[in-house]
Amino acid sequence: MKKVIAISVIAVLAMITSCSEQKYPDLGDGYSFDSDGKYTLAIVNSQNTIMVGSHVLEYAFDTIFVVVSQRPWDDPSIPGLKEMTYKQRNEAFEKSTFRQYWIINKKGKNEHIGIFGSGNDMRAKYSNVYGPFSKEEYLQKRKELGVPKELQLKE
Image 1 (tube, rainbow, N blue to C red):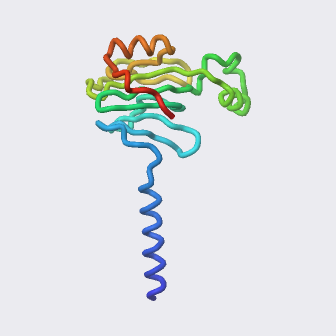
Image 2 (cartoon, rainbow, N blue to C red):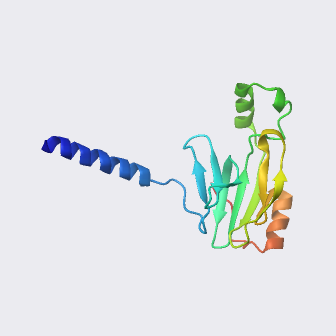
């Protein structure tokens, strides 16, 4: 009986330890990463609403802002994307170097303001989430919003 209890305690401790292991940091103010551990990495708010969809490549954050580079699944730089099989699309996605950029103002009011995108990549738009941007647009919006220069993207 003692062996069964000991094994049970060890199993429970192992589950608790593995569940508490977090690869990605808490972004603060209710923002965090959502990942399936292998293929997707998105940023969600405290209601688990997707703010920036997968595939997040780089990020940085401070007490006010989260800045993100992302490669979307519906990558506009891939010709013939809609006609591809899943396997072809996945291979093209993995080879793609396309990036788009986002800025989240964690202190801004998080109001739903509409829908953007098309097809499988339709998403809700929120008042405190800016993007997607090209690199040049992103750099301009950083200046406009007063994002500190020290806040640089990193993987």
